[in-house]
Image 1 (cartoon, rainbow, N blue to C red):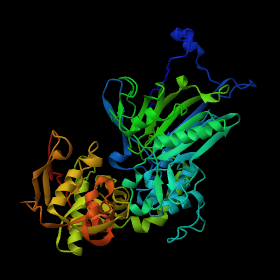
Image 2: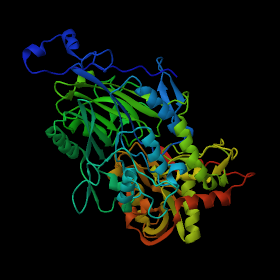
Image 3: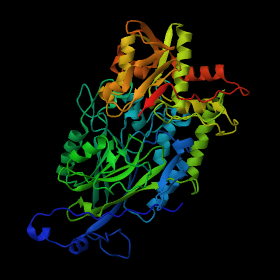
Length: 597
């Protein structure tokens, strides 16, 4: 596949003094470091400017093998305005692309924006993501920020991934002791409750000869609301902007003027195509969401922002507090893209010449040779995982997708949790599943040798990798109504989180209205009957929601708690009980929520 056209940026900004202000565009362009020294050619002395290649990616989530379905594709905008999809991702291909990209760039640094691990497919998740850390070491990752998913198993497990050692309960998986990450995890805004200090390094400085670039890493301040309570116990998460500004000053005091922020928080681009022109409508016009406010407020001392979390692709200019354009990038997720940025380092000032910054997202296409060391790594861990992962747990008649306001996969999980809930307690009334916990769909086409329509344990694990338990709690009908309204109000007002309902819960969502009114109270039915505000409803959710996660405080206020097995066990039981090779389960119609818009 031909590489996407490189987006060259030549930005100007107001200079002090009338003479500079009157400079012509031609004079400005001439003054820019257009031919920055790359360190090549004879015995020439280093010039004033040095191009540094910054390769970055985010939200890998342990996807070592090529992800399947829509999770393994990207959309590319064509010159004629049409779009096409390209199969992308897989560390065997990512390694080849990164290694090819580095050729001819002696000054090259590779950074990531968090969520390298967590919510991982079975190949990595089964082994507490040791395979992914091993792969990232081979990829020569230099540095990454933490993301929210780095806290799925708590701070102690994150420290083990950084420092090495065998798992405290599962022990060592091979005859070699796990040595941990060769790269630093940065967690500038994650503090130990007792000491008030960052739990890991807040920043790191990349050095090559006389060139120095500082990296500050933060995760989103809202991490406690999207991670289980156990995962963030004893931790405080501070404001992203304040933290970055604080450590930018620390770096400057050390004489480091070139600074990149790695921020596990993101935005929502106006287009789903990875290569669309974000700035066509003016600086930052093509992107919205939390990262925009962060980018507008982070100190101008920071030269570029590598972001993540929203799994979107963008390369945008957002003005810094002084009004100067600053590059903000994200490379989608699952290793489908990487961002190729050129930072031009000014040896005289020690800073980045921002007017010369160029950046573009590149597709991790599968039309390049596989990296043999990654193939070997995948093979080695697959041998250990195969006896568990290849077991058939059910049969499907067609793809069961996980996209849309209400998804077939989300509905199937809710049905499975209702059935399991009734097994634990026949009084269970309904089930609700958080959309962010539905990590993938199920594809009909065989992934390995299992045959079409067969759902393996590994595929189920990819859908539900968190090992959340299924919890039962009692709520009044009034509380149930409140829960549904919290999908579109409070913390979820701006970006609704629509819970996936079991088949016996139906209602209308009116998107022409605003706030809590979008849930039409009179339309809510359980088993076809209107909700009785005074009656008791026993609701099955996962442990994350039962703790009030994802902006659902009312779900954290239930009574009569009963904790069952993990959610994947519930899904497996349901598929096994309701499907056979000759009578596979069909995708749910995803029509429980009637949407008016």
